[in-house]
Image (cartoon, rainbow, N blue to C red):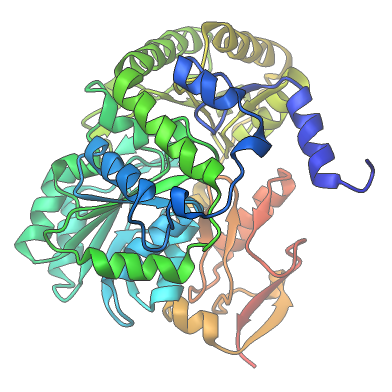
Length: 479
């Protein structure tokens, strides 16, 4: 047993009986008979390989094609492509399907690393729109219509616009108005809905991108829709998109040996959302509002809520996300994240400088919510200190000198991180989650970037993306 480190770690993690406020959305707690039936199967029973009765994912003509058509109908789109490489592959295929090397794409700078990597793969040139920065809460929200309009007017040759719906913290942008802008200028509208699969099944939640005319959207059913981790879907309308090109692009990156566990879980999750999604999501929203009120009454904590809707960068808000500002107790969100996990056996989705974020989904219960609330009461009582958490340097965005693709293929050398100010990054540095690059390939490394990295390292935050796992050195452009 000592020679199976991943299996042993997984068994230990599962047996720890953690209270989960992270993904996947099913929370290992199937609430419907269909989900119970699916999860009661032994893993080995459903682990099959491609065979004629099971169809082929590359050129589906049978059950995969039928499941894709049902998925498209459920998500109000004309086409759907089942993905077993995660929404990372969905985002990359979405961008690669519509952009050629040198084409411009307008997108927020707080995109996930999958979008940055898609720029490397496609050779597209990013035009960044700055998200609205909330200095009080210490987080980034969505983008404004005016911000996108300015980017379009200054880049009328851009081919596409990509928007996040919602951000990691639950904020959405005004999709209808932004889509109208793209239509005026014959640009394609793309959407990263990694955290928005549930939007399509309850009217109390923000609008799903496909319902208001997006051309393509990449959606993580596993995050909030109940399917197995790594299962996703790429949605498309045919008006401006050649779906044959999408299929050919997917064949470049999608495995030829798909997991039927993942594919069948997409089938099951879609059916559950169609038949029971409204009721299950009503429960999730009610549970979130219950927690929001309780946590706000503790003192020193603040949970983002309806009162923020209408502020710049928050056209609407996903109420199933509990984005909780905790830094007023004198601890960072990273510290509270660790305390919850190590001392209270609670796993939340994210801890950053000022906040923690707990995802509430179709698998959550009132009992578990009370456990989280009681833990936050306890943490405030035990750990509160008189300390101000300052991060003024956090929002200084680096300047792109060369495109991500040019930087990726350029000659590089390794230098001490402390000596890299003014150099052009040859690799990404990011905290995960959320996987948003602090600096991306092709961007200038600044003093503020190093200060932020140093701050995160001192918080024992997981930093990824670099050749050097200790991040004592960094790759820069040069020979």
